[in-house]
Image (cartoon, rainbow, N blue to C red; front, side, top):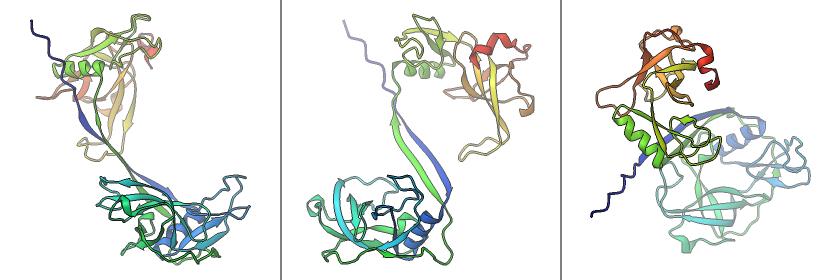
Length: 319
């Protein structure tokens, strides 16, 4: 007798990426503009400590602090970790050390990269200096990295008014997380069923609610769910929103509607795009059905079935 083959383990690369735009207060504006001018600024707290990078509020007293000081471009490594496989977007493309460096005149350390030939060349207490980027715009990347530097500490913090011509007042910080996602047993069954144009959920053995997509356990009772239940294909719009901002790499004209849809037989609404109807005619209670594209592994969108709208009492618990 031959043992059954284990189910295929599904994996997919996923990327979560968005630009975060923020304005700068006087302290952060001075700090980033200073980097552009090859000047490192810190801020002095009520008890006389110099913090680099600077903060706007005292971490002990929570009082606003504005007393800026200039510190040195050399410093001492307080701790480190070797990065043998740099990722895209990191400061250096070759292996380097992540280091915390207490710049001369500062009482706190700043995190950045240290360009070193290998981990044997890095140690706590070693002296380093800033390697400035050739083109500077007023960002933390104006510090290209740190590099070894054997000079003794000489510089102390000196007062600075924080004034620069053409100060940086805002930044766009790119946030990106790329990883490999592997669904568990329940979601694997759900994804495989979608490829066959079926929607499968799981029923809780305690409260008997059917969850779609399944999670492997009931979020209410906390017990495992293994009883598979096919739901839909039609469902009811419970809530929706009108999208007016075009997403990057998404070939859908705005405005369009994204909705929560309670499939028939399910006790949890899933979300999907509504098509086949003007965006301003979508409404709560609208009856919809999935539309599949040729070769698609999941519904492209949902469209009206032509049935009368569902009564509010039929879906109010799923809003």
